[in-house]
Length: 465
Ligand code: FAD
Image (cartoon, rainbow, N blue to C red; front, side, top):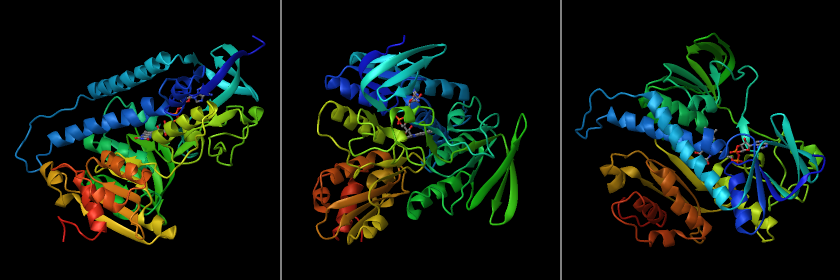
């Protein structure tokens, strides 16, 4: 109709930012409406975190079955029914997205299917096929997320794919070229390599995972080598030509031009915020030159009714960061004095071995002017790590030398993703090296390495000389 239906809190996008914001706002007594144009759960649940981790675990299982590792257990005729793998993965996704729907409904959040576009400072039009309706809101939270960056020479389609298509492949490709050795490229490239795909990774920098410290990335590099993944560093991808069955990629290393032909070209060179088709100018919401929405520490945009969270604002494009901001925005709208504090945002790469970091690295801490105490403890000296045959890796703790307060941590190795949680809590609580060293950790566990790394930093390790 001509006049908009009135809603109180309108959330646009039902990814880990939007659905969490909607639930928290509802918990705080707000009447919430959420608009989603595609699927509940957003990128993370449908084509991101969850399906990638499912494929990673399936590939890992397959790899272990084929690899005796000196334990004396062998299996014969191990096969992969990839259609079944995909079916199982999709089942995981469906359980979780179904769960999101149940949670939203259980919190009395109204769910509207459609694409929201701002038509004024307090109104959106929601388009659904040929239908459309107007919604007038008191407050709005923009959580429209991001999509893969498409490079001009490598338009998505056919044999040139993004992470979304890679996760949905029906068969294990014989060969694959990956442009971009960031976390998504590494996670997916390594996974297909484990399934038997012949993988080449083209990385523009002189190190894969360039966002991480060299010593951290090196362990993943070593594993990729073991899997016969061809990692080409300082490689500038130039162009691609495809036919029905294959794609040929031209790239340059220094000034030498090379070509490589594969079943697929997977382009994972970053994500782009979904802000260009939202009508943000109609709403008076300002963006920066990269299309990210500008917000204050309460997630409020230049329009004080409108908030923005997750991949559409600056900071690491991670699901838990989106959810965290979602809670803050909802609380601010409900009148609570919340604000974001980004000191503790863990970042995990679900590579093999896993990488997890939180807070400052040693170099960052020094750059910020700290004198640091550093403790590093190797997996190879931990009883549990040995008994589960995972000896590659380390736990590193960085602290302020003056008072022992923990500033950051980096973990590489099995379960790094879970191990980092303790160190995140330590930083959040302002814990010192001594606090961690004096905490009794069960034996034998990987968690003991956190305690031991703190002891190393204090100069009194038990299991290291
Ligand atoms: P999104 O999840 O992108 O959700 C936005 C939603 O808004 C979408 O559902 C979209 O359809 C909807 N939408 C967009 N425009 C409109 C509109 N106009 N109207 C209505 N609806 C709209 N992060 C991690 O933390 N850990 C991981 O392990 C991890 N793995 C990843 C693996 C892959 C392959 C990829 C691609 C990403 C991964 N991420 C991971 C990143 C994570 O998925 C994102 O950071 C997260 O999904 C961002 O959440 P969001 O709520 O901001 O947006």
